[in-house]
Length: 307
Ligand SMILES: NC(=O)c1ccc[n+]([C@@H]2O[C@H](COP(=O)([O-])OP(=O)(O)OC[C@H]3O[C@@H](n4cnc5c(N)ncnc54)[C@H](OP(=O)(O)O)[C@@H]3O)[C@@H](O)[C@H]2O)c1
Image (tube, rainbow, N blue to C red; front, side, top):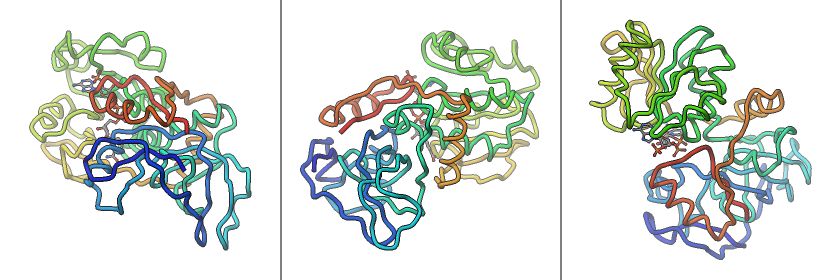
């Protein structure tokens, strides 16, 4: 089958011809309708999360139809529309554990569009729950225009949190439509000035930092949170898992995708509380270029790949 991946860890992704997988006990074979691109795909292909066999088919997010069932499966039938996370989704087919992070796809959107949800929207939802964001709270979101940020803005504002979205470039109209109360263009304005002088002199309740990789920058951003607040990093800028540092709880967020999390996302989409904005849809053969574009920054919503 056709797939996209690497022959060596860290190599440039390329179109591959690999064997069609066979579902083992407890597994489903899914014909991929689309795969979602995430920054983590390149990290996995670089060998940063272990050394799976080569060639390595890239991608973790998928949506598609169940094509066949492995022995001992009972939860799905052939033809079911599903979405979720699995290893090697930039391909025509992927094998998935039926008890793993997979759920029936939402009805309200096209199946291919669901491929944009698992990692980015799952992260957004899990962060809101982990940080216990409540109605009326303020949430400062750095890196708001990308995949996680666009979902988090919607889900947080649906909970009546007040989202202060930080982007690079003027994204105020788009972020406002997603529910942001305020959008700050980091290329034109000082974030500390806007927060401390104009918006929250006492500091915000919650910081979600999708951008910083170094502890110094994260610590500086944390100064914008009041004592008793929460600061979350998705990029390893803290290693703390809930300890209070200088009055603020630090959370090194790591996504633990589950079937329940995906089912909740599907429910949010079907209820109209979560919209999926596809920035770009590319054929499988153009996935290497799309991955390179995302690595270069500038994501506005999600990119999906169609085999
Ligand atoms: N720990 C976990 O489990 C987990 C889960 C999901 C994601 N993540 C990580 O979280 C990060 C965000 O994920 P994503 O899927 O949202 O990535 P994405 O779709 O690539 O979006 C990142 C966004 O951040 C913006 N950005 C970059 N630097 C910025 C800055 N200084 N100020 C404001 N905006 C900035 C980018 O746009 P511009 O380049 O135009 O500024 C882009 O819109 C990634 O590093 C990803 O690997 C971690």
